[in-house]
Image (cartoon, rainbow, N blue to C red; front, top):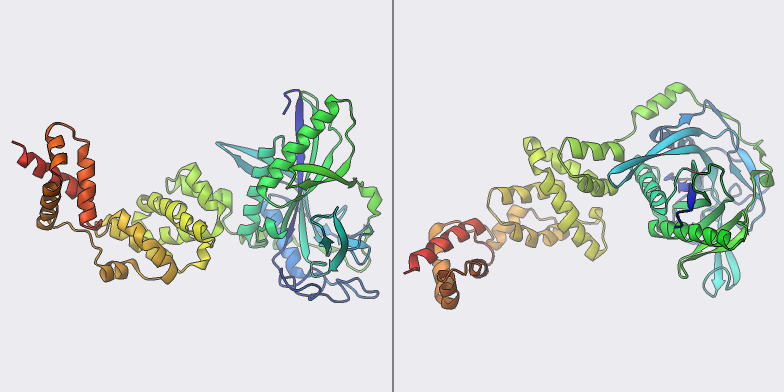
Length: 491
């Protein structure tokens, strides 16, 4: 980006709530059903059908507000946002305008070794629209016709609007990642950008460095991954800089991110709030929120990502990196916490090993098989038992790793697998001495090299002993006995 300009970025995040039913009717809100299977007169906009608020939507909205340090409104109401589009059968969306449920919050965003506080302008509840399924050539521009699926119409959404306080694509990406983690930890959203249950629109403008007035903004839509969000914002910043440098005006408009071409393209001129002709929804009464209810919800919130990262670092001694990786996956963090709880007085000593196994070998196995931790039969007690076998020298780390896939697939206890396969470490001096003598006799050249002072050959000989014992020999004992044997044969 040009050093002459500063980007100003604000994000609008739409989060589908994990309720069983839609926001104003009893239709199922689940993802993936056949088209138009979960539709009724209310969510399809039939005349005379009246909405009734799903109480859980209000509860989830207040939970999000508490987690994001917002002020929860004592009085809140719904409004009609009027516009025509084929996926909006009523020709208006029930949303919130001037009296949202939450306002004035903030989110601390980790950025490397630093933390940036980004303001939250507001959080409001609204219904989702239906979905147009474009047919024909790939993409909207090449389609020959579109089909309408109303399963998503009426699915409850939270719109979370940030202050325009971010200045780089990296900040925006970190913000949405932290926000996603909070919503997932609260249990109110599944965080699946690829399925559209978490959607992000970015408002981007630029201004000369050192000035405070905001430039003309564009809104970017159609970003379904963290990488796409970062790349789309970076492209749009550069596009606006290039336009100004060539004397072209920036137009307030909505643009789509084309992931295949890695560019934003114009969709439509951006509307203002006056274009939507907001007015209070006459079918839904205002909500009055008792302060005691807000206090009760705030007290019941689970441990959130920032607090969990701090605990991992300060109480358990994990690095900032290890803590961040664990906390980024709620299932991984829950597994880690359960294993720590089982470790008792050894928790602090074992924390690093547990983190290494979860972040390293276990995650690698999951990625290779394209599975989630919850899809396996591995349990925290089994991992703790595996580490205890390593710590007590019953098995080596190498043998432990060889057991992992079977433990994850079949749920067998590590002690049982070790006993079945006869994998206990060989620590008997006599048995190791026999294996060492056999290796020395089979490798006279390497023995002579060692005697001549080329001590690096010791590693090769250790490896031969480990191979001869199928990895069951205790490595430090092999090193000690091997050196003794070599020196004993030295003339």
